[in-house]
Length: 412
Image (cartoon, rainbow, N blue to C red; front, side, top):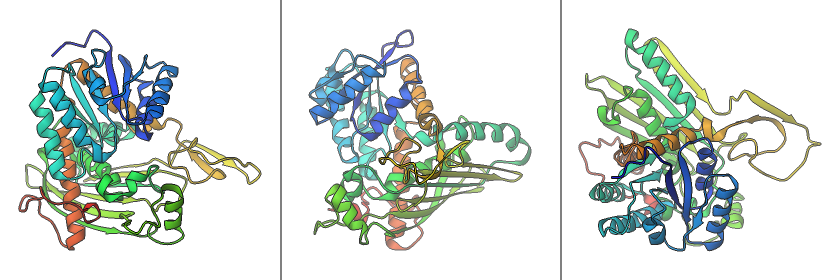
């Protein structure tokens, strides 16, 4: 591999939607990187994206008219896979073919969460990237959240050596529902709120319980139990809202995906101590906007974080009217009243730190600390949760195979 440590890493984006733009906002605060290319299927979208990159001063971004052209460009060192879930394995297959044929000089790949829709796809993603010898990173922003990083650092330095390791992580992410239609289609997204949001919850919980600097597999997953439900978006008038916005609610073949999920995961450390992650997710949350709540408990200490307990709040009376937007907080539900403001979403949510870590890892030709191996582990946990909810029983992942399992709402 080439040594990029003495020059700027040139990256290409595969995808130009909501999450790709969030990564752009984060990269403004990251050094030694330029966004030099973008590919997405719609010409107008990739053109607008490239123009935004240039306006932000992030590089002379070129819109490519094919995935192969982006991957094989001599101006691209690494790619960020930010395309919809149902396309990621096909993208990885194209990258694999081009690299193995010697047509691509990529050094690394970073892929947005979740790595794949099910365990079979996730393992194939890992097999393909390992067969190319490319560096690979899994873009799980919550483990890079500034409060998560700082809180874990303090507790493991000050409290754990004196009183013992943490034993309980409670994690939750809730909002009013996704931005794009494919999230609501189980066969394309892979599931519903559980797949979309609990991938964050299980991994940040596992991260908080793990020894700093260790691989997350130091903790063995013993058992999983879960519940899923359709609380809101399968009922009128909300099905009508889905139909009006995405053309979904009145389709005869539309199967509502779960908008609520709760799970309990029991791990075991090397001393046979049980450690627990309690996770909860919802697309049916009614509040100011996206809410992330994290807690960590140990023998003589605790940690709490809520993304809506912000230091900045605004009050807007009923006389202040305007169009809907998300200028105060992601997934914003109102424009009046007492509103929390997340003044640096890309930083607080972890996108800045995760992008900095991926860029610097690729520049040093080192494997990122969060990579496709972790992405596979996350998908395995998600499949165990789905199977538990479907069958109404506790799942023991080390005693039964999940490789062929597909969530009910994702079955065609």
